[in-house]
Amino acid sequence: MEVFTGMQKHGYEQVVFCQNADVGLKAIIAIHDTTLGPALGGLRMWPYPTEDDAIFDVLRLARGMTYKAAAAGLNLGGGKSVIIGDSRRDKSEALFRAFGRFVQALAGRYITAEDVGTSVEDMDWIHMETDYVTGVSAAYGSSGDPSPATAFGVWQGMKAVAKEALGTDNLSGLTVALQGVGHVGYYLARHLKDEGAKLVVCDINAEAAARVKTEYGAEVVDTDAIYAVDCDIFAPCALGAIVNPKTLPRLRCKVIAGAANNQLLSESDGDALTERGILYAPDFVINAGGLICVADELEGYNRDRAYKKVAGIYGNIQRVIDIAKRDRIPTYRAAERLAEERLALIGQQKRFYLPAEMLVR
Ligand code: NAD
Image 1 (cartoon, rainbow, N blue to C red):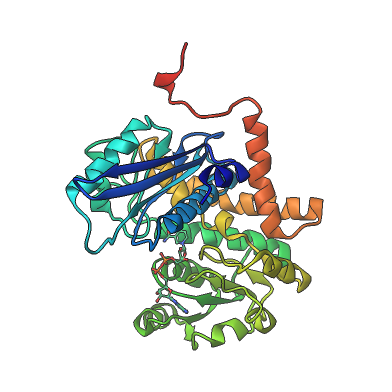
Image 2: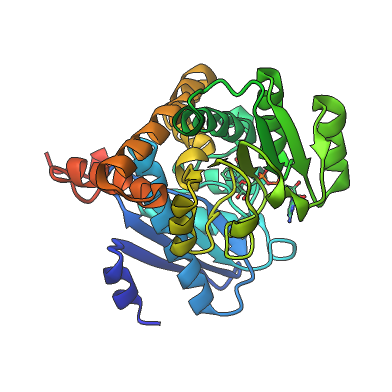
């Protein structure tokens, strides 16, 4: 892979390769853009088959974080890191502390967090070497499991799209088809039930679906049947790429609003949704609740303040819809434009984040 070619194409600022043979560390930290502030993004531990796979993944994910933070109105940039390894076999205190020293050496340009394959315990080990880490134990001021905040944000964003597509942001009496009732889906189901929505759910984990049936009176359908449910809102909260040429003709909803990452298989599926008159709440805007809470940790976590900011997802979705109408573009494009316009506006004055202690006064 031509790393510089890849970096230049999408404007990456910095990619750091970190190795420590004594502890078996091979890690990559990618900082995409620090126009708005330090680059924040999780540390993924994954047994990538090749180094190119790891580079591709960390670059892709870091750029995604720039857009997510910018669209959420946060003063954070986009970054991500990966450790090449098997999270079930290769973890140790020494490994994560070695990684923590590399994070510390970046002096605050990158702030790490949990992601696939890493845990609170790993973050605590990193914290022994650096303060530039979130998602540590509650004793160190963590915001804890991000799922309730993500669900709360999805619920708020869902109301904003409903207002546009259905003429009301009161979800009472509406039918919501929920794909996946795991961490986020379960909490989302509770908000919807409390508001009086009718729930149709599915999950490959029969126990998870049964729990939502018992607790919230949801109707349970087969995992394949969820796409064809006659509903007002389809809420994907399980997998990515579920809006694709196979599922599109089967959808009978007016709105798609859910937590899952990368819901569109490709951009053409986003265009097809618009043609079919289905209003799509872009995933990285509506599912930013967890990130907003983690960002609040940097100021000393305050739950009330954090949830007030998460409620702002309602307005963020409205902004996306306004841009879509203004520029006559699908909402998935409008979400990117929302982020890019903010980056351009703020970035006119400010490029390349330097921690305060490194500024020459
Ligand atoms: P989770 O693993 O707790 O829940 C996912 C649920 O989906 C599980 O119960 C699983 O059994 C079910 N599932 C998997 N495949 C399915 C299928 N084919 N059909 C139906 N159900 C299926 O994950 P989560 O934390 O609730 O996250 C859900 C989605 O939201 C993921 O895409 C995740 O990346 C995204 N997301 C989560 C957060 C968060 O705070 N947890 C934040 C942003 C985005």
